[in-house]
Image (cartoon, rainbow, N blue to C red; front, top):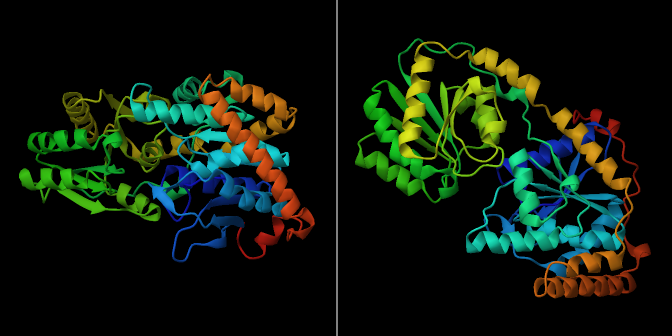
Length: 433
């Protein structure tokens, strides 16, 4: 697994990589993770339960935990790790991960097959999206298979990266349902608590939250908000609370570590998601598993997550969010939502073991197909266009030449190979599995 986004940072991609890796280990596979360092103490090789080995490459981050594209400087690290660990397949994660894309670029030099998972949705009409989509198309030109977390995400990735649809699979996220059990009993009170846990950024629709929260508090005196998360929109949220004198109605928790999310969710009855774009929405799934009725904007892959009786949808406008919240408050106040039944239903829908099984199918399909030859890769790369094609082809050829120099300067026999046979049972003795 290769990505810029991994622990100790907290997020959906980070958790997905860890849980998928842990599930594959429990199924008898050897899994390592390659990511960047987190100074001052998260450097070198670290181990995470249940036996997940993590290589922290000494590259600094540029913005939002992503590293500056390194290309050739990453190749010596990548080559050494792949050879010493005897890796047979690279699984890259996230469209904005430089390390992930560079791993796909370098993998063919070592005869390693490649899979890419896209966790986000991007547009087509703004400069940032156009540039990102062209970079994604170039890097995925020779990927063996891609995975998306929703069907709308698959459609988005196929269009953005110009991938053949037959090579793009859909495998959703999952959760550990036991970690999100509902409260055994809710306090006998007329107060209805609305939970919001989100990164406080424009894409997450914080402006909608800022616009609708005062209206909801004014219309429903027994409603209070608990908001967890941090981000650039935190100042707008706090200003709204001060302007409308809602300090006693809106509790702002700030950053919430993932292990504390279940306890925050158990405080509420309704979960509000105001995202403007969302490929899947793992926070929605966690909230529903914890027994909350969900109110969400109808965007991206959100309609694919839950049955319609477990979620109320709204258009991404302040008026419609207010309408959906009003209906949800009335539903919960009348006892129309059973938290424990919701939890049991989610347990049957999403499970990491099933996700690992379906991912194994993708891996087997990739390993069963012949790899692209170098000439085929050059032809496919040139097909990117009259301007971008030659640029990426030059990068591909220079990458091959630098790899040839590394083979001469750093002979494979000088690499410190990991000769211990991977055996998952050895972790059982120390309680890892």
